[in-house]
Image 1 (tube, rainbow, N blue to C red):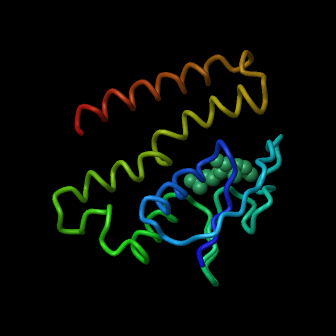
Image 2: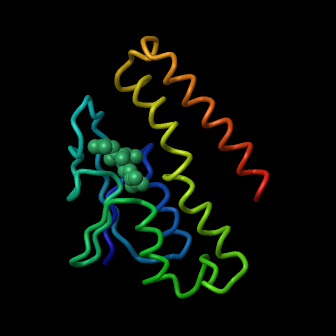
Length: 144
Ligand SMILES: N[C@@H](CCC(=O)N[C@@H](CS)C(=O)NCC(=O)O)C(=O)O
């Protein structure tokens, strides 16, 4: 059975939501998120990251890849538009947008303000992050 390592307030919700939506049997392993404090891959999961998905010999970190994997292997055509569907491009764009475009500037803000707490010493990084988030939202909306 699929096993998903989850913690509150993390990207694990993306994968859990999909599993619930498709009613795919799975086991949840709840862990407590450990603030990184400059150390990485230290979460109590097989990969050190949250979420982690285990499917027999397959062990995955990267929530977007888990979503594609689950849809392809267990989705039976549900939710993901087929490769020749006119909706496919939009589906791929928004699916990869989360980690590829939306999160990087958010990550800078989260890192400086929550984990390092020295945001006031990096006003240019904060301003840059905010501006990129603003532009990303408004310019992508114009297309879809
Ligand atoms: N791009 C990865 C990011 C995974 C990630 O960084 N998860 C966070 C929790 S949301 C984490 O485990 N942070 C602790 C660490 O980086 O060690 C994904 O989408 O799964």
